[in-house]
Length: 576
Image 1 (cartoon, rainbow, N blue to C red):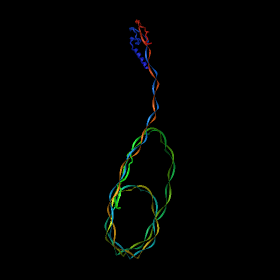
Image 2 (cartoon, helix red, strand yellow):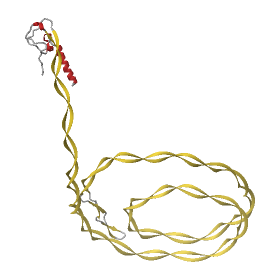
Image 3 (cartoon, rainbow, N blue to C red):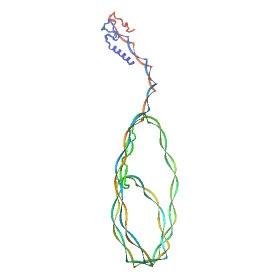
Image 4 (cartoon, rainbow, N blue to C red):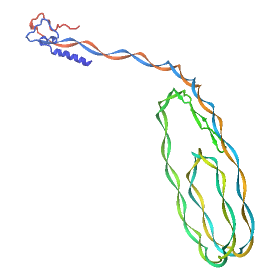
């Protein structure tokens, strides 16, 4: 406001300064009518001119404005909640039902028919005859003599030692393998063969033989015996004696201190949703025997029915549709107060013991055994066998083989392969460490004396009667009966069953879960903006017109004779 006032004042003074000199009255602002400028000298006097000026002044006014306040109020809303509900439905599925059908078939069986036959053969029957003869022989009669001798025996001293050895421990594993077995099938055949029949003949001959006659001879021999001599000795040895000393040391240890802190965690949350899925029905396996066959058994001489292999049939029903509630997870951040453990190091003084080994000298006495050799003499007898020629008559038999033809029945075995399965065990050797104690035997020599007997064989002549048998083969006719088998074919009929799997439709009731929506009302808090009118005061600048007296220099000319011109002091006022 002051700056505008100053500008207005400066403008007024500028206009006064720029006024024409011809209109000097009121600084050129006022003009006098009828005044003619003259060239004579004029007198100047000052008059006050009233000037209107625009001035700005400050003024306080009162205004209103609208303010919105936030108010919390209750509001009822409709919420839909899913409630699980169990329902039932009929599900159709197919089951393979076995239907057995009886059939008949014809087969040919070879029926054995036995026929009895008779044949005659010759057998050599042995006839034994007992004979006797006188035989002279020499017998060596023993004569015993007692003698004494010294001998050295090594006496065993056992010492126990320990050693570690590795033993392979067997671990058995059961395995299954298939193998082929040749099943024997027997067939009877007849063949002719030649038998050599022995015929014995008795002969005699003169035989020379050598007899060793014992001759005893006494000899002397020297032998060395190690005699133990014990010697006592003394030795010094050093023993480390433990001496305990108590010392102190600084030990640092950790102490757990609880420090509280705040952290943000992810809290698992979520909501339940309903999903539909399919469940496969279990696969049913059923074992059905197939049609067997009739095979000829030579041992039983008849056809034996052998069942066919077992066939495993698989059947499965349609899948089941089910509903389940699935939890859909989501994470929410939450700030919690936690406490963590911080290890703090502290120190303390501990006492401990130190063991120092101090050497100490000791003396012990021990014995040493020296083996001193010693020579001894002993007598012993040596038996020499002196050969002597002798002769005797010996009866011997000579066997002559006479050929004879015979017939026999025999069976021929044909091997038919057959598959079988067996379980066998496989042994894996696992090494294992063991410790065993064993004894070591040290032989310590020891001298002993024993009595022994020496046998001298004295020859003596004796005689005896010997009985012997002579075999004579006498031919004899015999008759035997044998059977011959003829195979006669015969037709037979057998009944067997065939299994057919017939599909059958079935139905059952299945329970499933359906989520049903339920509408309910819920009250929540809602923020609402409420308007209100508020009064306030502000300062403004208002323009104002004021009148101000401004001095003006006016020139007066009394000599001009202007009667109509008023006096210098009769200026009209511009404002009341």
